[in-house]
Length: 310
Image (cartoon, rainbow, N blue to C red; front, top):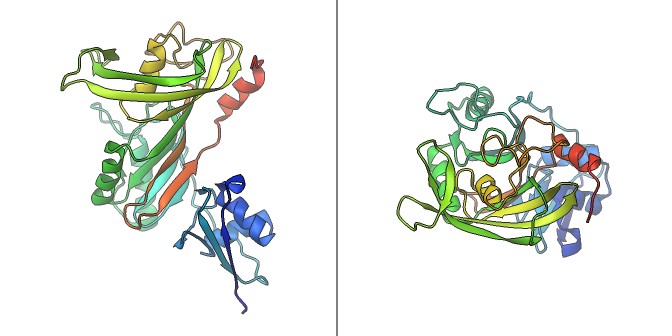
């Protein structure tokens, strides 16, 4: 069997999904490309890359080792839970795309249908591991990317990265009105009242949490703005509070500026907030991992129905 070995240094114009780079390198079918990832043919910066959706940047090194006479078939995928879509998995961690309406972890009420329960069931079935370990959370009505550790030490190392503001976290949101200026930063001290409502305060004390939210306008739609948001800190309800306090609540928000958050074209019973990009350093290997989640269908429908004004 003659193994072909190809290497490619990613240029800025080709940055994006790694499967597209591999297809450019090998000129093989998309189905065959997916099979090559399943059969450990693809390497990113000298580390095995099992996920075809991994994002690469300029300067990354992509290697492909394969038999040009072999058709690589995809391996059967495990059944998917409605609470999430499996995005990436290795021996230390798992990345999932959470559905809206799903709690990340149980509250004081002790719910058993949470995301961490669903992921733990998957790990127990596939790997005979007892549980997943939460690293971060998304609000119930928010969809998108989350990482879980397969052990407590890995989860703690990932949590340290979040505390040090190292992970790359981008969200997309539909917010009420026209956001001005078109890009900017919200920065405040965030506190919680007795009703568990979050709000910004001018008090710089030990109980308040420093919160920084960067945003830019992607598109204006009649009566709303489609924004991309980058979190520097990850406080509970941070995006929702900052935009609501600016007079532009997230559409569908049942808690913050609820009247303003209503829009006749947003009929989904969920928040118009989605965790679209997640990047971090793999705690064991040090490899930089970055993932991107597609727009939920509710967003696609809204943007298609709305008439852009910019």
